Image (cartoon, rainbow, N blue to C red; front, side):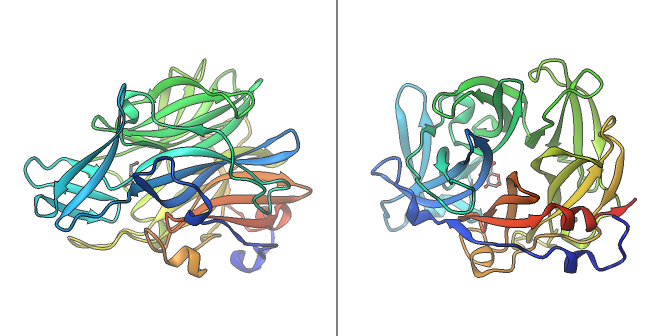
Length: 364
Ligand code: MAN
């Protein structure tokens, strides 16, 4: 934290492979094709690193002039709604809007899949259990899981998307074979929930990111507290300070916060606000900040610049270009293995020495 050398120069990458590509994952239904495998949660289970990767699938069949939109219907399973190209506006590769009533649909549906990664540096098997949409508020998919070990179980905070909107839901597992659902913990519109791994001052804490439809605020995230992980209160806004250009559009927690001798370390994401109607989605990058161990609302230090930017071809080109979006990490012998979605298409992993990461932080 004390050094004066440039932060980015200090963060040398020990390794930085692309771990998973869409072609590595079998479709969950013959009517679907895998458009992306990205934004994975990470956990170390019995000495092996497991990823819970988001698999986004779009409709395989093409019909000229039409577009197939997938959804899950409780009691029915996968349903494909065919809409005329002329009846929708494509807002970005992920979202179309119906001209008739202004409502939006995703162009894909997501589920989560367990991927086994041995020591965390390469994929051993993609043959793991699947966590698929089940509840009415999951009709358009389950997305972006963040995994935190708390007590005797892993808690999975994920995004549930449906005609009701985008909200934050919770599940837990003891073995990554069966999952218990706890329902919606924060209603629409909210995502990027990252749970702290232990009680602080007697309560559980999380980061979350409500969407402020009226632009009163610059991008920020929020902290909340809970007695039981299900009921959240004590909400307070949290911002890591004056925004760099890379975080002018959106910001949210990325990797669940973890303890270091100096305090809680959080790796978060930001995106650039691009001006104007029809502007492309701005690039997503990641930074880090350090919080007081006894009061996570108090920030001690942050990286002055992003520590991960879309640079490699697999980060710059894909379903949504120019995205790096960390969602999980594990520590191994003094290094940190951070897992991230790249261009909403692939899973990347970047390995940093913990000492280098701590050195990149500057007191605030
Ligand atoms: C945004 C993106 C998508 C995601 C939807 C719903 O458009 O993050 O990847 O599917 O929100 O969560």
